[in-house]
Length: 114
Length: 110
View: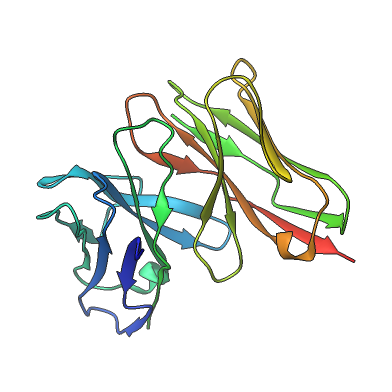
């Protein structure tokens, strides 16, 4: 079982460059989300989606865009990378049908912006 | 809003028992999750509590008191492989979102 797959695993960008972090899940989960994890800050929610065509902002959405055209995919776009976006990014999904459904995390993308 | 607090670091001895506390303030509460995260890896699900009481899963147990806004994760018979960060996360009623605490880094020493 693949679960949640994130690509790439590592990425280095220069300030001002744009890129898309990919996330795909094969569990037919309705809910998908993006977190960033920084030392001393914990996991912070960037954007989330409760189904295809529906997205909303989390705690730290500035500088990021998302779309959800299919149930399986939830890409995260950095429009103009900044050093403050250096972080580890996790995509996570869960079933919307059960209240005890846990988040399943991808293996993360380690992004450095110089 | 949600404000989740847990200790930053803890150290315990192999074979011992350790309790990691978590307090939360939620405007509507719908469940408390615990995750384990080894260095350089993704978080993995450990336990879920929504009602008061203790949930036991092998060496790991989790407790919830809704009236006190308090939970703890109890790890028994500690092993070196239990060295990791433990994340407490709360789900708000009517939402699928999880808000995470900053995590507790547990070091298990011989």
